[in-house]
Amino acid sequence: MTATQTNLPIDARRIAEIVKGLARITEPDRPYTRRAFTPLFLEGRAFLEEHFRAAGLDTRIDAAGNLIGRRKGRKPALGTIMLGSHSDTVPEGGRFDGIAGVAAALEVARSLADAGIELDHDLEIVDFLAEEVSIFGVSCVGSRGMAGLIPDGWLSRTHDELTLRQGIVEAGGDPSRLPSLKRSDIKAFLELHIEQGPVLEAERLDIGVVTAISGITRIEIIVEGQADHAGTTPMGRRRDALVAASRLVLEIEKLGFAHAAGEGHFTATVGEFEIEPNAANVVPSRARLLIDARAELRSQMEVFISDIEALAARIAEETGVAITPPKVISDNHPTPGDPWVLATLEAACGRVGARHRLMASGAGHDTAWMGRITKAAMIFIPCRDGRSHAPEEWAENDDIALGAAVLFEAVRRLDGQLQEKT
Ligand SMILES: [Zn+2]
Image 1 (tube, rainbow, N blue to C red):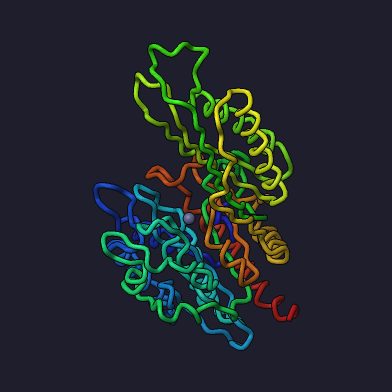
Image 2 (image 1 turned 120 degrees about the vertical axis):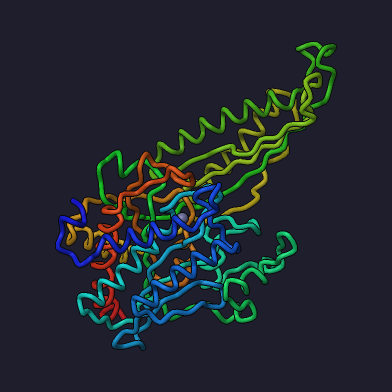
């Protein structure tokens, strides 16, 4: 089914106009690049703001630098339903990651207006600041800000003599008001995003209703061998850090497969690997591995961490090379989608005629932070070959539009049911 086949009041052409308009605002030699805190990002923001205003939204930038368009409800005391995503990209990224969600959210607001539907709640459309890892090395700045969860010290991070604090000011925010930004009026938050994986396309489904955003744990392992002459040290008398580290990598992959065969989404990747002295004629003396592990279920991550500790001890013993106990460098817990909002999204899929499945997200999203302050959930739409964070990233406009129709339907249901719930 496509949006053009339904009778829902979503105008797919307007979604395409936003996506194409933002795609034109890119570093010309490096499509599609519109990183947060750059002049191009602000140009993209100006484009969006113009469209927010043209849609009749009351538009502002909050203290954390998020662009927000508000459509007033009949009973503002009920609070706010919020929809949105992000318009920044990674370097040489795609046209749809984040952008599809902002365009779909805006289209919901316009379609409600076109249909003459007034909601009881205020409806806010948001473009979060700096969802991707930014020039300051940190991500989800805007959504963390809205949740009151920007870590101490972040504002003084610098890049080319610019601080994050100044960057937020340049985006129109006001860091001095961040401590009081944490929103308590948002009653529900929904985000549409491209899947960034191959599942929906392979299964010919329209929508993934996201049960959880996986937690991400990074674990560092240091292997300490001994540097020796590569030509004179007999094979049997070496303490080769790289050989031990290589065994670790292969065993970590096996553990990853074992956990992935379990109940929830799970991945494990050795994404950073360095050796010293990295010279042709020297037996490697040191290796450093950084594991990125992602789990939908916290209990599974805890088992994985202890599996890694046991693995490091075993390989140290078998190889005679010292391996420091694996060190957890960062540890973010999974964010489950709100069960009631998930049920509403599933019902909305049914109403719209979108074929859907439940699935977890392996990538991080603003929704993970919004989930700390409100009932939050997200939906995925298919993307070609699962490609993302690359210029080849592609989502069919009709697929975005059908996702927008699901949001439209979900917002109408939430508007009524949230009142019964409170
Ligand atoms: Zn994204």
